[in-house]
Structure formats: C-alpha cells, structure tokens
Image (cartoon, rainbow, N blue to C red; front, side, top):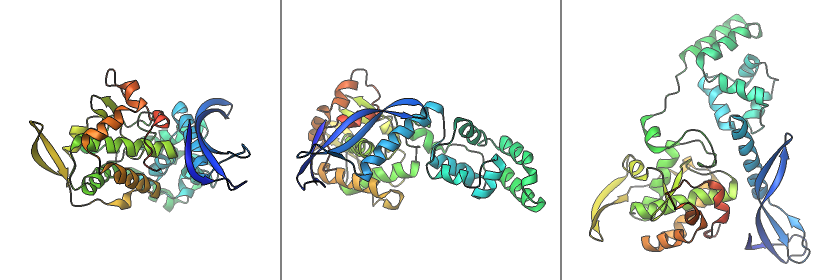
Length: 333
C-alpha cells in the first residue's frame, strides 16, 4: 500500500511515497512476517526510514516472538521486580543473571526462552522464596532477611473487579494490540473523548476508540487501551462496551430519546492526560480533531468502508490489530 506524504527526500529534496507492506524477517533463527513502513524517493527510488518506522518494525517483530514463546514483555518484567520491592542487583543475584541482565530485559532486550520462563515463574511468591533460598550465599544475613520479608509481604496479584469488567483477556496477543490491559489508561481515554466532544453517544465513542487504538498500532505496533474489538452492525466496537461505559467513575450519563429510542449521552469534567505517552496523546488528539465534528451516522458510514469491518462483520468477529495497516482513515497521522 502507498500513501502520499509531506516528507521530502533526503537525497534530492523531492517527493517521496510512504510504503506499507510485510516483509519476512529472521530473528533467532525463526521466520516472522513483520509489518513495515518506509519511504521511497520518487526521483532515485532509494529507500529510507525514520526512527518511528524502525520502532514499528522492532515492536512487531519482538511482540510476535514474545507471544510465540510466552516470554514476558518489558513492563511485565519490571512489575515483577517492583512487586517484591527489589533493586536490579538483588533480583539479578537471585536469578543468577549477569550484573546488568535484568536491567537490559526491563529496557527491551528479549530474554532467552529459559530466562523468560524463569522470570514468569517467580511471579509465584513461593517460587520466588525458593529461588532466594538457593541464592542465600549471594547476600549478607541482614540483606537476605530483609529481602525475604519483602517477598513474604508482597501482595498477591488479583485483578481488580473493574479489570474483569473491562477486558476480555489479560494475555497479550494480536487481538489486543500486544498491550497489557490498563484500567486507568482506558478510563482516561474514554473521558478524553467524552470531554472533548462536550458529550458523546456510545455508538460514536466506539468508533473513536477504535480509530485511536488501531491507528496507534499502525504507527507503533501496539494499541493504547489493550481492548479487543468486534465488527458489529454499526461498525467496530470494544468488546462488552456497554459494560465498560457503565462502570467508568466520573462518567456522567444523561438519558435521552434519539430516533424514538432511549440512549445515554456520556460526559465528564475532564481527563488526566498524564497517563499517556506522547505518541498516545498525538493519536488521541488527531482522532478527536477529525471525528468530533462528524455525526454518528457519518462515522458509522466511514467505518463501514474499512476492510477491517467488511472482513470481520460476518459473525461479529474479533478484529486482529494487524488489520490496522489496511485502514483508509489516517486522520492526518
């Protein structure tokens, strides 16, 4: 797929085309079909990429590898350490890793399969205590006892009730954009659109959520919310969206009659944008700018032209995020 762009060629200063395609890449002796974006100079036919495009390739490749081999993602690796209130040196000693190894994993380096399994295993408190006992000679007695106490007192991982209401699955996959479910981010995303439109109906909100999540995936290889989406009658919608909207704290609902039917208009007093990264803020703002002036009917019609909806509407199927690369609507992104 080709896309017109305002970028100029670094070779000639002339026009370029942005190409969206898939390429086969080898990583650790395995083959992966990876989504890529790059520019082609129209004058010289030379290829070049930006750091953003390189990030997409790496994110897609690494996410596929991690899910194929059940290797934890960087934020999950970091959360395991924080759960036990350990520093990087302490957890590396417990696991028998090199001095900087755990830090490298938290920063994005992919563990070997054996190390990945070991990191996942220590999510279990009893397993972590056994690993600590095996490494007792790595610590002085006082530090050992302090670490042991910290592990024993760590909280068990129990999803909050809202997590189970909001998210279809907690396992990362192509169906949630390889993003860990994040209740706080999801709630602020919904509030951002409700506040930015001065009140919104769920049918329109569904499309705005979809376009934000899928466009962020198209650009960076990961979604914003971690939601799954179904191709329903009126376009793509978050799975169990009515349950989600009914349980957002601070989201006000005004019951109105629309087309002889009772529905709820959603509004709020603002959103906390500090929970989002810069790229997430950029995508959210771009989608709001383009879609807020549109009527619900116009947005439904726009979504019905997308192959992601056409391909999966039979049976109200789940939409995989790699369909984002066939979107017609970029909203200037």
